[in-house]
Every structure is written in structure tokens, then in C-alpha cells.
Image (cartoon, rainbow, N blue to C red; front, side, top):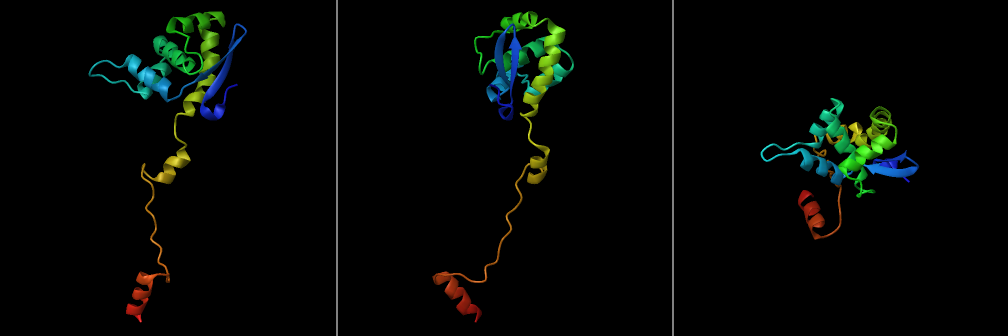
Length: 145
């Protein structure tokens, strides 16, 4: 069973249920797949190519999403599953909408980003204490008196 909170989605193909997940390992696998010496490709670069409709990137994203729960699925296997589900248009449209949920889970919540203000946590507010216990506290009060 897919856990949407973890970015997992379920899909049924030819009577078999699959759980897909774009976790950190999947994102790293995609970066490694498309990077070349001296030309690193980021996960965002891959998604940009998917949004342009580049089929090899779409197939690779599906492959990477299968790897956590179905590591036996190969790149060619993804193509076979697409055909078994009725072809590229139906499979890609349905799965891309479901995968949108998974991809969204890889991005931070905008409210969280705003809360940390430019990626840095807010500074702690120093609190003045009226008094305390212990030698240091007593000595500080004695000097003030």
C-alpha cells in the first residue's frame, strides 16, 4: 500500500499493483544516469526535461520511481509496462498526474521556507532572567546592590 505522506503512489498495470516512490536514492540515480564528466545534471534539470516532454527522461523517472519497491524493473521493463497498460498516452498521463504528488513531496513546504527566512533559522532571543540560583547568580546580585 502506497503512503502518500512519503511520496509513494500506487498504480495497477495488467492486474499487478506497483508502488512507486521518488525517494532520495531515485533522485540520485537519475542525476547519475544523465550526468557526464564535467557536466553534472541535477534532479531539477531532469524534471525540466520531463516537462518538455522528452521521452527518455520520462521513462527514466518512471524507472527510478520503481526502484525502491520493484528493483527488478529495468529501463526496458518500464517500456514493456507502458505498452501493457495501453500505451504511452494513457499511461504517461495517468501516472504523471500521480507522480506529481510524489515529486511535490520532494519540495519543502513554502510555509517552512518562509519560517526559516532565506534558509537560515531565526536567531534565538536572549532572555533576561530576574535572578537565579547558585554562586554566580548570588554574586551578580550582590554587585548590583
